[in-house]
Each structure stands twice: as structure tokens, then as C-alpha cells.
Image 1 (cartoon, rainbow, N blue to C red):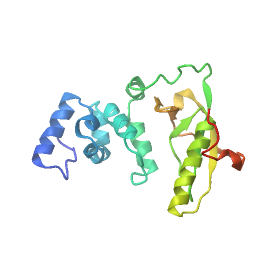
Image 2: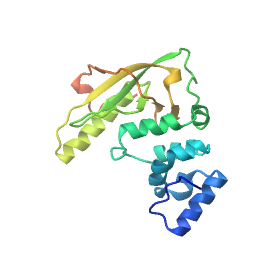
Image 3: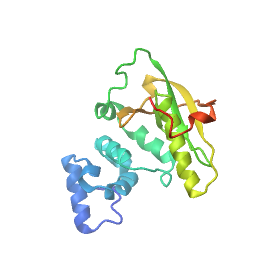
Length: 193
């Protein structure tokens, strides 16, 4: 397996990873959190042999923060994925959508709002998400700014669509804008829809 980066793996782990790749296993399912670093180092090779999509989508779904990875690396990995394979592992992008363009929203809180890939068609969910993160930042004593951003994208721009407590679209929009949301809406105590 030339050109693979097996650094940091024991000889047994190396053998196990090689077997899993040859068998077409989902590396995240097989190795848990240990797989993330391997996938990050080898995503181009995994794409080359047609084994990236399942392992990467599992890793993405089970990783809570990507700050240490960086946005450009996330983008590069999703770009390396075969979208047809990626979308076959998720909810159909056009399910229940009658138009080619969709409006999406994303909530942010904290001192810095990073560019993210998780967007939803619901306006209420990002407001709640921003309020929840604002509470977390308040407990940490960090400066806090809450906001909701909007975008409109063509469905062909969507990498995939997930269903994990919300209708989530993974996409990197070309243009986003901050929308005006009354501060009273950023309350964890208000009724959600």
C-alpha cells in the first residue's frame, strides 16, 4: 500500500487498517475515534481507491468540533468525495423540495463566527443553536455575540443532506448574510417549533 501514511500506528494497527481498507469497511465504525487522524492524513488515497465516503461521513457525524482540522481541510475532504456515493449514504438532497434553489440558515454564537458547512431550512433551529452556544460561552466567561446567517444555494451545491435532530444540509455557500433577529428570540426558554 504505497503512498499511504500509517505513521503513529503499531504494526498490528497497520495490518488492521490495511485489511479494513481492502475489505471496504467504514473506518470510523471499525476503529472509532482512532480513525479520524488516519482519514485526515489519507483522504486523497481513500478517495483514489473508492473508500472515502462512508468513513468520512461517519467521522463527520461523530466528531463534535473541527477547529483543529480547519475549514479548508474540511472543504478539501468533501471535495475529494464522490457526491453520488456520499448522497447515497444520506437523505436525498431534493426530498420534499420542489425548487432547484433553497434558502438555508445557520446560527452562531461566541467571540468569533467561523465559516461552517451545516445549514438548515428551519429558521427556528439556528436561533436555538445560537442561544444554546451563547449560554455555553457565558458559562466560560468568553465574549459573546449571537447571530443567524442566511444563504440561498442551488441543490447541486449540496454535498449531502443529513437527518440528525434537524434537516441538515452540508454545503459551502458562496454568499452569506447576517439576518436581523430580535434579541428576545435568543432565549432557551421560549417555545421551539
